[in-house]
Image 1 (tube, rainbow, N blue to C red):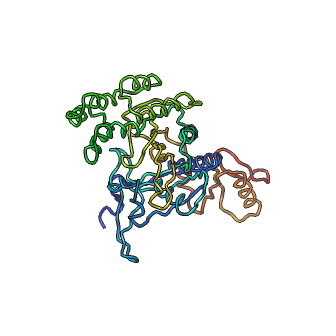
Image 2 (tube, rainbow, N blue to C red):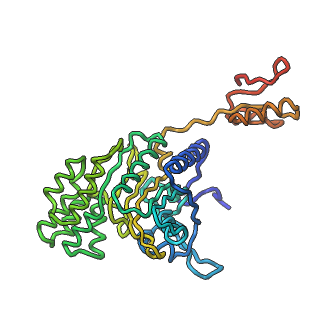
Image 3 (tube, rainbow, N blue to C red):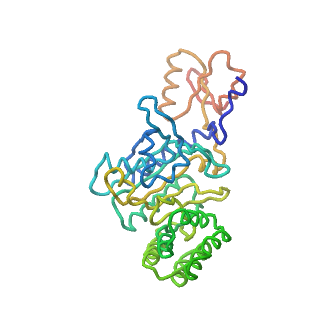
Length: 383
């Protein structure tokens, strides 16, 4: 078959040493989450489509691959996001009455890339908190995200926060719904001023001005105060600004900024939303927020907040990882040699045994030292 090695567009292998770096980061993050009390779950790669795309997950429809199950005759979906699966597990399987903290790690698949240079097979690592509606839960998610970014070596990452509730309050006051609401939401995400102006041209002047100002309201605590002065005095707007002010006032080492047009998850999120960015990456490397009620379709309407990171994007934003150093050992059945190799591996060293006839390819093994017999003992010497 011609070009049988080619992969589909925006799908790629992860090669050494990047694969090892990605796996090491996955382990560090799951250990970090466990330290905060988050329990690991492993949802399946495929589910019945009506389970994956019900309720709050409907906006994932265009991203989801659909296949026909030859056993049941039903449509299956390949997961495009693990968060809805976590909501199903919390609502239908765990049935905890108090707060439930869940984390996960695994590949997801998208029908199209989320950005020009992104993979269609992101590797998601995330943490979700169910059962608490207060701002304290949102603050915990932001604290944990900050710790995760530091664990990944991204101390300079910036986190932008917004609030979908503010947008919803304005659309309700303006009587906007359905297709126009979705179009306006997307235009605000893009900060497309001409499109925002066109969509709001027939609205009440005060509300039209509010929508047009949202892309310009970004920065620190002063942004919240400016929004209080300039946006309509609606209860939903005031409550959203109170949430953002509370998060900014108690950052606890979290570097936050406000962007009232940095919205995401139309039909999914309903409160505080946030995203993390690093230099050199046009799209967010992590994103999350509040999505209350996602488990309602599974029998339990619970408050929820959380986030996920894309390990492929993170690894791509870091300096090229170094190959792990190794020790080259000769092939042989000598008991002393075998004991020395076993001891080195038990101590955490990487030991590569050079098989017969492979001396000419020694450089490919990536070793910087060798195990050699000197004065009757096996010793490590420079290669």
